[in-house]
Length: 146
Image 1: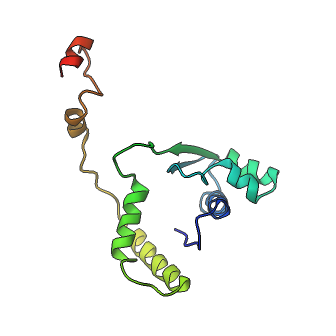
Image 2: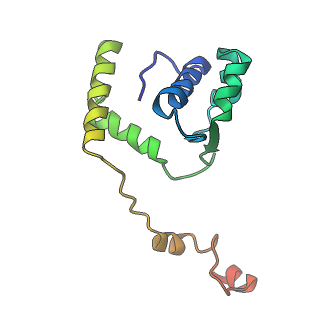
């Protein structure tokens, strides 16, 4: 996690560079699952770094965007919600205090190896979304009657 003053293209580009150079320096490709903000693209890297550096960073990345109209929360949104409830649910006067609090929260959460427990199972999805995912052997006419 990184606390920044704003959410600009430059902020995003700096975070992405840190991601590939510091946190994941060895994998050839880093898969980045992200939302659909206009700052989240290669242009941000080219506006922040020289072309060779921007290209080097982009060559290490594989982007997967969350659906624009998805009704589910992705893991990052869930973690941010937990952060807000457990750490940022009060007035904090300055950035240094926010950074200190977020860092402590993140270290504690990582030490405890916290993870998300999905309650929407495949079986539940098959029932709820049966119109979208027909079963094997079901005809088009059967699907339309469902």
